[in-house]
Image 1 (cartoon, rainbow, N blue to C red):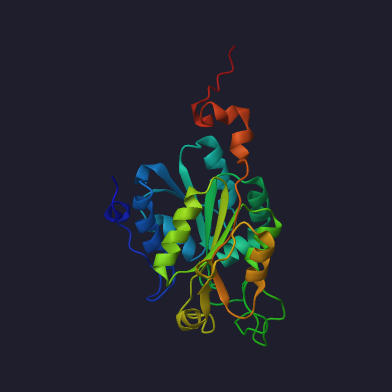
Image 2: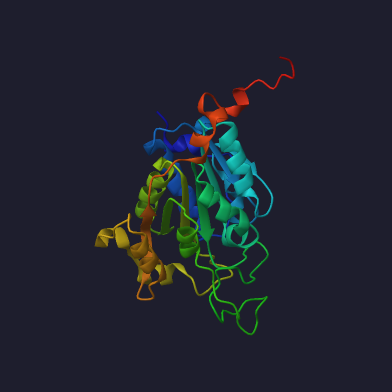
Length: 275
């Protein structure tokens, strides 16, 4: 049986002290043993950005791919070897900016995998530009007079795209984050977990202090996760910052409807050109 230490990497994180991504890394290491998963049973896939360095900081199989392209790689890996647990990770710029087209189709396709977005509402690796989730009028290096664009709401995007598991958590609340991650990975289908992961260096608005004061766990209030309209209401409320599992519905996974993958993983199929 695996333990937390089995997922420790020899590579130490290069994130800034206080970065919210540390919380997600710790939560993943604690979640996998709870699911009786061994390191060799997991593939961690990322794109480009501060958060996308995570595959090097955790002892699983890992792929550090191209900007915004983690989901095509992760889906391909899952289809080739569907017995593996596949977890894609990245930031809001990577997933909700250049990669958002892949995200929409991955959600409706419903391949059995989990996508965790470390959402800090800023481009941190390039030292502080407006991202797709930056607030209206937010001043950054790329918008010195204030951001003129409305921020993308990843939860309503997911709900409208047919995502079968939609959740959000704050990386500073590790206990809730572990619970959400565990249920997301156990869910048979595509699971989106948006996490508030504060950038302590370049975003002085969406801070740890802000989230500690404003987040509320909707599951503790009796939210019905089968009610998509209730999920939309919680995802758009301005009374508080909602976290928890917003929506969950089981429907057939993509790979379960592909005859080629039902009998055995694709990597075990013969590619011989002979008869």
